[in-house]
Image: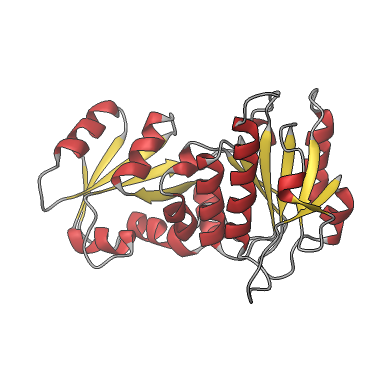
Length: 269
């Protein structure tokens, strides 16, 4: 077991991965903390490269059992003040896992007869990405696709906001709408592309979401790009009242995902 008590080169690589997307991508790894997120990651078979523990205290029952499940994974004992820096908190987490970044391969998202995929177009807030992944998990979506110039799925704020759902629902980054549409067209199952827009022609509860659907959520400020608007087979809107002019992107996605789940859970007529 390696011990780290100073800001050596390895510590600096991990520290840089917290704030620098390019370095995170170059290293091919990202940091995860918290009992539930790490447990969900291990349960779902995510490759763990390193487990970093607090060198100053004994392991809890949970941490000991986790390490027993990962007998071949490298273990590093780190000084608590350094571990706290990696955890971006005042006090050190008991354990931080260094996970391998998965490939941005759209085929990681399964497509079946009840397919439900979500596209988040050019999001700027990593917290919103995390929140939508969490809602996608809660309401039965098969995966999330982040398109265009966007915040990173593996930004620590996004990872924390998913509360572990990142490791249960595939999240894939795509450069543009074109590769996503090519993937949709290759599917043997017809998929309806449905965009959300405040000027949509149909209220969400009047649209049939029981068919295979790719749901489009737009940028927090600008909404869907013109390319995605043109690509959509339908545009739906969420009726709102009161003085609010619109909903936060993550809230809007959650509302539509709930409606889709509600429709799909109804007994067949």
